[in-house]
Length: 470
Image 1 (spheres, rainbow, N blue to C red):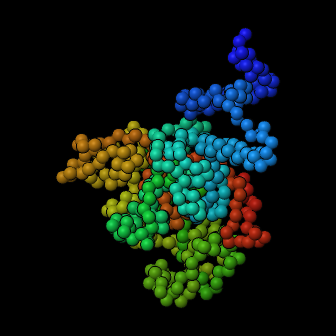
Image 2: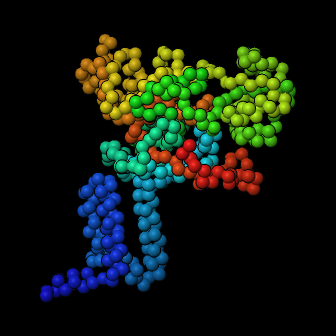
Image 3: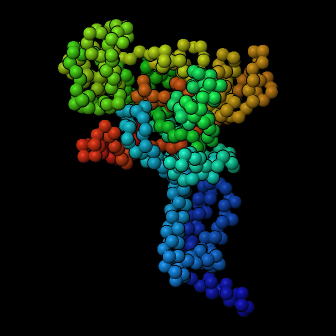
């Protein structure tokens, strides 16, 4: 037996415990590669074998050092690197944390709720922007620099999940029109700003709108809404009622609308409003001298106080029976709200409360294209599905070929907030493509009330482990 054979034989003589660990992690890695479907990653399998058995690579060289400083520093580096790798894979393929930042889903989910979001539910996406820092969506805090490299960009691919996205699911997704962003004015989005003020103004007035930046699909801001329409559905909103395929949407207790509430002069106290779970930030008391015209148009008396705030069906009934309340009127649409419903500039008189009907595209479905419906599906064809789109002398051209129809390449979804009058949702920016879907919230693991102090009820213990899927 030659020296090299003896050396290899000695390296293979490891305790059963080491061989067990090597086998366990090798099997886990092979199953993961099979799930991802990229078998080139199997070329890294020998590294696992070497780490546990042959040890040709000095993975733990620093443990033999007699220098205490080296031992201390490298033990921290080792722990941090392992943690970052573990977090990267868990965050990318299994779970992530999401905090509710706005009231668009109240009262189903509240501002200050922290959600455990399952990416495995609908199947995790293989990273489309692979060179990005884990746990940072797009911008490093404090440094205010990008947390990702735009190149390379990988094609969209979704792994097999444990479920499919169903109508009325609450869903986390990347903001579809968040591809182009005014860093100083992110809400409303870039396209609405351009519609209101003109593209040249938005791009030239960096003092107001800031730098204009581009973000790839998986680096766009995360949103959470309820999926009220899935691919293939026809959806319509009539007098605030969502109707899908001719049937009214299922009732959810958390759905709320804004109301004007008049009293006989009685002031509604914080205690009364807090009892109905109305956030202080959502309460407005009208200036009767300036809003007299609006108050009269609501059939109310400008001499008495008028409030504006959201109510669920339950809190609406409570408010009706509240001492001093004389009249409640649901908030009507205003020109300020309705001047930017999707698609922008579409002359259909669609509003926040009365919208559609609109078809939600399904992968493989063929739609007859006309100059009338083209504005609805233009962004899908041109941006989400990457085609060249032009209209010349009333004729539609796709990739320089005359087109009278279009076959969709992806499924699309329609998202709305349960806080129907205070939600920037699909009524304003349109469809959510399937490649923007992040995952499904499972439960609330922490809930903090921004209106209260730490020892005054800030932690909402009753919401811990609340099911976030309804």
